[in-house]
Length: 246
Ligand code: NAP
Image (cartoon, rainbow, N blue to C red; front, side):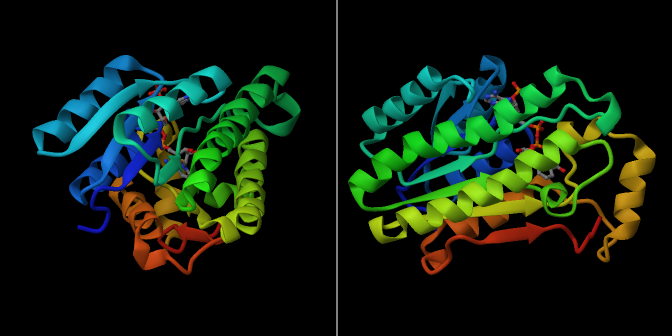
């Protein structure tokens, strides 16, 4: 087992990539804190992990709310005694072309995707620095690297996540804490279900592997980066895209 007895928090673990990552980590022996916005989704993920013999508990959290985030970290440490891994996966889209984008769309996406990652990363780092070890993994996107039509707000956050990740790697490396980002391409989840089918078909065609990604493709990347196999990997952005370039 590649994460035996490691304690891992996964945000946005109610569905999609976060859910797949929580399940993968539990299969690999981690004690998983399933954290997300909707209690029902949190409960389902926890129950499914337990049904497979894994260890998990759920926390309802809004990552934009610092009190929620601090409570989540405290509950994880109280229950399991430490915190080894956090996957800052919670993220949203609110798409519009530049000239049509509203202030609300801008603020909402910045708040969840950027401030949410900052809140969780900072709160987790305090525990990890104290312990002298830990891994922080952040959700970027191929859209942050190349930009995308209708995603000014989202692209800004996903490029910003890369900057935060590299800064944390520099600050925290000597304290035993690694920080890396994963930049997925187009992955079949409730987030991409909102996209027009013709755009998804185009992305599939653009990818040299001629398919869209599955949540498990990204969970496998998080698993590698969280494990001790990646002990020399920090400050990096792992693109898991099927080769797609926008
Ligand atoms: P998803 O299916 O929409 O799931 C996102 C999860 O985040 C949901 O469980 C959602 O909770 C949760 N969430 C949203 N706002 C939150 C908040 N304020 N506090 C706590 N949890 C919150 O998305 P996904 O496709 O799995 O994407 C996961 C991450 O990967 C995101 O950061 C996304 O930007 C990134 N990514 C995805 C793709 C892709 O193609 N799917 C590509 C590149 C990057 P609710 O269910 O309650 O709303």
